Image: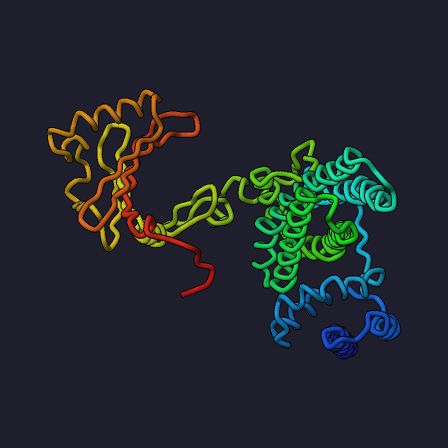
Length: 433
């Protein structure tokens, strides 16, 4: 009997959630059709009440995938429906959890947001207010230029948020998409790009600003930047980050933290490394009860790199599909590998594998090979380039000294490419053929 009651309660909850989703979608579609924000907001508050992060995520996904509203249109509506939902989004209260610890990616995102808020809401806003008041005053050219210079300084600092957005887009979004969350990431990435472009455009206008420029337009543009940046902070902390915390595992947060410094930080950097209380699974010692994938080792038939893992078949296919010919000789000048694409520039046979590179060249050119290898081994050079015309090709040949992380010489990579088609390029191409 209790099971029947629970089933009925569960069914009722699902029905209520479905009804709320339909109402949310209807509200956004009405905005899309031109309804006023005030009218829709009043009806929303009366009919819907508190909205969860998951419901907003599902709504955006449904609007794009099921209703057919383009991503660009959802991006345009994003700020509008954020204004409607602000204050009604379900608050997620957490105790002293990992994301509140210094070095955790979420903690870092929020610390950066506090710095961004200080920059736009205090420094940039202060200079903008002075700039606006100066419209009604007869300022000297020097004083006017000083205000423009201060605004330019603020925008230069604000461009640092590209690192904040890039970490979000290139580290956080891929994990969310692994869990099937595409809508919010597409929308937010588009808004991020819009903010980047807006800052660069206004900065360029300020650089060329003169006595004949329209100060009113400049003030409106700067106010818009402040508003959009603040809106993005709200969306991150009330929608994106709570959603990520609900989905991502601790191991995934560890990986994001480890790779964050490769992209960089915005205005402020974490002052310590985040070390979770437990050892991440991929660093735990393997035992008979764990398979190779959970212990961090590559399964049989796969090669694990620092940036991913490929099967032997995938790796060889990738190397053979590169639009270049590759040959690698080891530290003892022995040929160990060459790529085998469809159209090699210089013929290679498997017979060269295991031979010294000197024996693969004509006697009259061996001295050049030896001189180049000597420079690579001594550290005198790290690369050398040659280019020669051959029939209808223009062949670019590059040699690179391959070294370990501690600088030890591991061998030489030969990189050969026909660049005649590249040299012939003109104009620009921005669309698919």
